[in-house]
Amino acid sequence: MLGAILSDDYSILEAENGQVALDILESNKENIALILLDVIMPVMDGYTFLDIIKKDSVLSLIPVIVTTQSDSEVSEIAALEHGATDFVSKPYRPQIIRHRAASLIRLRETAAMVNQFKFDRLTGLYSKEFFYRTVKDCLEKEPEKEFTLLCCNIENFRLYNDTFGRKAGDKLLKEAAQIFLKRVSKNSVCCRYTADRFLCLTDKESELKGRESFSQARKTTRSELADNLPVKIGIYEITDRTVPVELMCDRAVGVVDTIKGIYDQYVAVYDDEIRDILLREQAITDAMETALSEKQFIVYFQPKNCLNDDSMAGAEALVRWIHPEWGFMSPGEFIPLFEKNGFIRRLDEYVWESVCEKLREWKDKGYTLVPVSVNVSRADIYQSGLVEKFCKLIEKYEIDPSYLHLEITESAYTEDPEQIISTVEELRNKGFVIEMDDFGSGYSSLNMLGEMSLDILKLDMKFIRNQMAKPAERGLLKAIIEMAHTLDLKVVAEGVETAEQKERLKSMNCDYAQGYFYAKPTPSADYEKLLQR
Ligand code: C2E
Ligand code: CA
Ligand code: CA
Image (cartoon, rainbow, N blue to C red; front, top):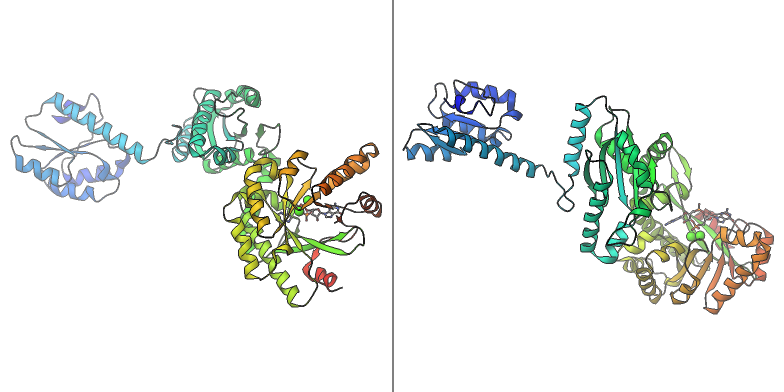
């Protein structure tokens, strides 16, 4: 009778007793929407059946309606106590049964959806997990169709978040999600992948049509919240379907990260070249923790000399990675990646500590100490507790802070001047010496120099070379050195390779020079010999 009432809307599986029902459930676990159960059955009674399925994590989620004799309050209560979701009494009233069945099924589906965190709560896009599943389904359903994954990343979102606060950041993300949705084709699926990255599965054809509009994004994207919202897009065309979906997504994200911070490039497509870069980056990422714990990172020292008498005035600590298989690696190969993935903070701390350890050792050996400059990345500055970290180090190794110079790259200043200025001021008040690294390579304005708390200006080597190559503009270098002196700053020239360069800088009253002309960066043992002398 129940089958007849429900068979128009559902497909019905019948079981003549509890054991048969359990067998059916076992092979159809995922597909059963509702169980209708009579308490009085041969082989196994309804209560025992209920007790068994409630113990199973999947079966227990299926709603159960128990049929009872009319007016039997006892059996109704017993059914509910054994975990039934609802009951219907005899004689059956078809309308009521249909409604109860429908609403229980709906309820359960809603609950299941919530359980799976189908949506990202902030943006309303799909969640990452749901997206993975949907992509798998789409690819399975249409094996012939060509699909593309898009990853969209808001450039400098972190900075925006830090500057304007979390609430404003959330608003921006919501808006960005909407802009993203509008830009991709109607039948694509989008999710929020990480904080400020969105992913989208779209068919290749509409992606190709839309690609142009993405490259124009910067010109056309009008955000109410930010003047311009630089959005970068990574494109991964799905050709090999044996690649796991998670890895496809990682690749789309990897592509977009390769153009992070590159001015005027908004779209990148995954190809062999990018694949090799990503593989290399992955290998480095996989190896970095071990490298740190096994002390594969080695600090080299490059002397810095006084230009007027050639005496050694200090040194810069420069890290190298001696990998057991890959051999010697220059920082250019791994520092930019560590700056992206955040590992630079751990590596830098390690370098700072190694330097302090050495300073202590050399002092104990009775050498005349000269200061050592360490590099401080912008990621180091944006973390809290930087000042305390440096203070702890000099306390631990009992060294004077004036022996530790901190090199902060010029471009870090242009990013968030206020934050840097206040941190730097604190550090200076504690007695550390601050050098602005790579001056002339970025875009900081000259008049900013006056506002900043600084001790030393370190001229970028390319800048120096450019200036020296153009006789007509030679005056600029001289003017900058003079201006630095007016501001009470000392000036270091970087990358000095020839006697001619050295002489010219000297004639311009530059204070110090560092470069191959004097010495290359060397292991600490070699540097120690120089100190000894
Ligand atoms: P940088 O701070 O501008 O360091 C100067 C770079 O110029 C060094 O490259 C040095 O070896 C090189 N150099 C010095 N004299 C000459 C010269 O006469 N001619 C030429 N052509 N080059 C010269 P290196 O050691 O490869 O470091 C590259 C960059 O990696 C550094 O640039 C710095 O930004 C970063 N870096 C190195 N060690 C660390 C570290 O421990 N922490 C952080 N955060 N960054 C580091
Ligand atoms: Ca440096
Ligand atoms: Ca430099």
